[in-house]
Amino acid sequence: MHMRNQTERHFGARIEFIEGFKFRSQAFEGDTLHGAAVITDEPDPVGSNAGPSTPSMLAMAVGHCLSASLVETLRHAGIHVLSSTTEAIAVVTPNADGNPRIQQINVTISPVLDKASRNIDRCIAVFENYCTVCQSIRPAIPVHVSVPYVIRQAQPA
Image (cartoon, one colour):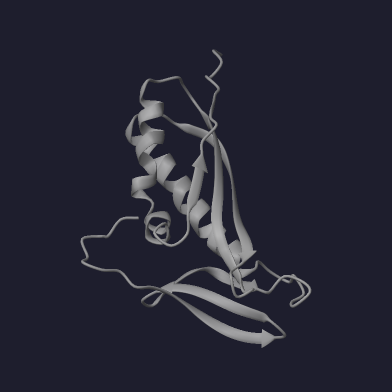
């Protein structure tokens, strides 16, 4: 994320109750809306699975931020990402009081890269440092990341 020469940025969400455990959330920064509103819900048996659960939303935020950081780090090294798939899983277990808590988040980013380079391993070693979300929650929730990449060089015409 770029700070746009600002000392701080304020990202928010307006969250509106719909029914049951369903909510409509609209992301924004200042007066600018970010994307379409998202319906969230609790998983069954409490909710009706009408939208992502809050642990899934946190996993999405971590997975997206890590993926964007990896793409940017590789781009700076002159390595083009042809495609990429990320799976982020929030592992929820009961704590000592029996309340569900996110124990860890496991993230696998599987990019397809345009060329082999000695810089790939260096990029993988440092990209997590640039992920705002991951580095912000990591003191409280362990985040485990793996990056199994594939090289697919362009075929001559």
